[in-house]
Amino acid sequence: MTDDVNLAQPEAGANPGQPEPAASPEQPEEDPGPAQFDDDSSRLESAEDAGPGQAQAVSIDTAPSAAESEPVPDPAAERDEYRDLLQRKQAEFDNYKKRVERDRARANRQAEKALIVALLPLLDDFERALGAPVESGGAEAYRDGIELIHRQLLEILRKRGVVPIETAGVRFDPNLHEAVAYQTSEGHEDGDVIDELRRGYLFDEMLLRAAMVRVAKA
Figure 1: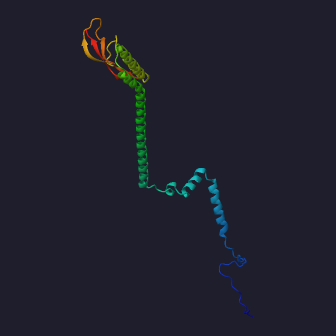
Figure 2: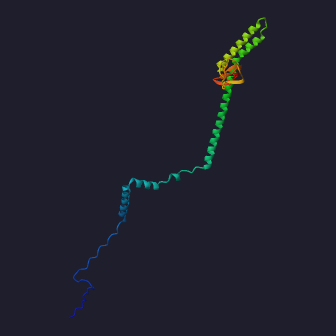
Figure 3: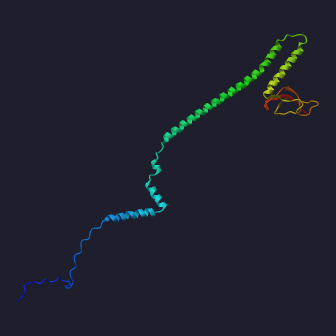
């Protein structure tokens, strides 16, 4: 009797003695979060491990340059500013020169006034001498009065640094003397001053007026 039950035929290539492998459970998808965190932490660690020069380079690259942040000066404004400053300094210098000139003129006038005040007593003496009556023997008194006025005048000039140049018995000096004549003279050597025709004066050791003299020649 033939059985109607059909036995299942094994697939080609299958090992009838080995059981079929069980189906593997479905693997869950990997979470990318931790991996990204690991990458970020690795980058931070690499930045911390970098040297000072590398860190400074990073900061320089990221910071804005100073030239870009500062405003560009206006050449026209700077020109006008310097021009105004120059004009103010020029005006101040002109005022200073005018003030110095005024002070110098005032000082000169004060010196002239002081000299005139010192000469006024001599003018009084001349007026009294000219107004005195002429009597017998009055010529000698008149001469004495003139000599007194002359001494007073020389003293006033001496106090102000004016002294006469000596000419008696000295050698001719072109820096102090002005020769108006050359002549032979007994008792004088060549270049000696014979006599004085006009008195010369020094003012604070500077030549105020040269003395006019005659000079001996051989």
